[in-house]
Length: 99
Image (tube, rainbow, N blue to C red; front, side):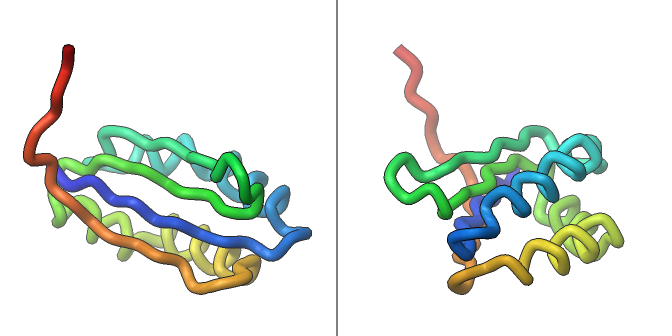
């Protein structure tokens, strides 16, 4: 499983526009083959910073999504709203501690 984290900083007046894009596409993203989990997080102190947190069956599934028209269209609309470059990375879970 791949965990994908993307941190995005938006222009002051574009946070609502991003939320509209995300809300319009979130069910299709979550329904994309190989997507196991999708969350949107907002920084608790800087309201223009959002993070997507998603789980993918494999890197191949993530790459299929990144090559899809859904991603290309969503990302094209989203990146116009940025105030800074996004920060993205993929990780693999090593351990999970449950008490």
